[in-house]
Amino acid sequence: MKWFCLIFLCALNLAECYKILVVFPAAAPSHFILGNALGRGLAIAGHEVTVLSPFQDKNPPKNYREVVLTGFIEEKSEAMPFSVFDMEHMHPWLSVYLMNHFGTVAVNKTFEHPNFKKLLNEKFDLIIIEQFKNEAMKVLSCHFNAPLVMFSTIGANVWVNTDTANPSPPSYVPDLFLSYSSKMNLWQRTFNSLTKLFQVLNNNLVFFPSQRKFVQQYFPKCADYEFNNVSLYLLNSHESTSEPVPLVPSMINIGGFHINPPKELPKDLKEYLDNAKDGVIYFSMGSNIPFSQVKPEIKDTLIKVLGKLKQKVLWKYDEDTLHGKPDNVKLGKWFPQSDILAHPNVKLFITHGGLLSTLETIYHGVPVLTLPVFADQKLNAARMETLGYGVKLTFSALTEEDLTEALNKLLNDPKYRENAKLRSKLFHDRPIKPMDEMVYWVEYIVRHKGAPHLQVAGKHLPWYQYLLLDVVLLVLLIVTAPIALLYIICKKMCCSGGDKKKQKKKSKKE
Image (tube, rainbow, N blue to C red; front, top):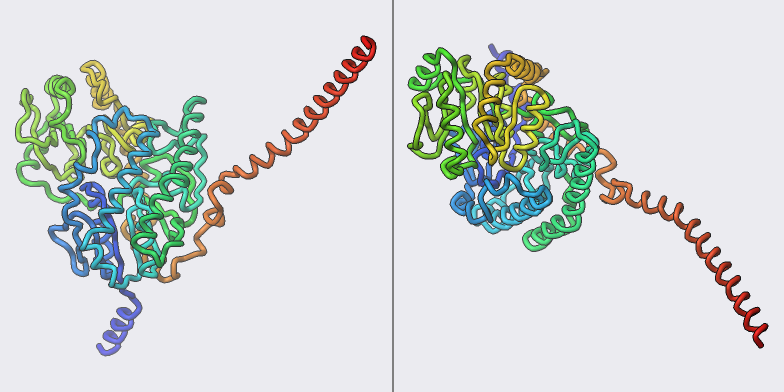
């Protein structure tokens, strides 16, 4: 017994407990779901976790402390210059400037918040921040003298690739704000290339300088801190749900880490799903799209088409009543989405195409009909269609004919469910659970003091050198200089010849 106790105490000493600060300032429930899952996972693993966000966990685990950014949720509408529905047809380049605005507001409000300022006198072993156009927040790594891990809510994208010097060829990797798949035609590849260049120029010439002003104002001792001084990127993505892209060693896919095994459904929902002999369609547009504000003609189209189906419909709707609601439709302001998708009677998921919904539907192998509105939803929808487990429709141009045709395809053609099940199989076939992988890499970064050996040399190059713009300029000079010189010589020779002729004519006249 004594030997057993000794071995047990030695094992406890081998396990290290780190103080970790997790920063998720976005006033969006979907973002908090990820930040909360990340914080809970680390706390359950034995670390002392402090989570800074606008939300609160109703049942936090041991070692999990919350610092709430009060007022962020209430002020969210003020930071939104227009409706989310206006963003459906927004030009991708304008979306870039909109994200600049969101990032500026989030950083300024966070740095000014009294609850944030109280944290500045504490000590942490590691900082984890959500990457969401908030470069100035990376300065916390300098302030606390701790390694920095960034979490990308939407997987690898231009914001992440800039920091890590991760290759992202525009020939087959579409930009975040475009609705392209990896199979692009000539025009799409051209526009994708221009969009990526625009993103890089915007970041380096417009956004980063504005973010550096926040660093200089609030953390003058860290004024020279480099924004790409990131030890690791945790990516909310996986090869099963998106097309494969290059990843440097400091980028780790942990997509689906927030998903827990299905729990028992509430009694009323369980009976509703169990008794659906023809199956159930689950319909949710996420937490950021208020469906009650949708144009009446779109609602009418959905009501008419869904009402004709033999399947039951669970519709997440933000109001208690829906005019003209069909008998086969059940409304609810909230549903346990992942647990519902796990039910065998769920035949289809109608969604906006948010990444959390994408991950959850693949986890359970359910085909999807996507009605994307803004941000990465169009990109996700294009991927689902390309991979064969979804169909996408234009939300604002929804017609009865198109919706009926799409539903008939998804409900009656077995290939969509087969492809969804294939993707689910790939999703689950991993050497380690994504939550365990996240915990391992976070601990790894602390153990190896930031793990600089994971960084590629390209991240230390200025952006114009990484893009080889200086090389392009040099080649142009080498090519054009002889041509220009030859042109000048020829012009002088022609001019001198003309001058001699003029002198001869002048002498003859005299």
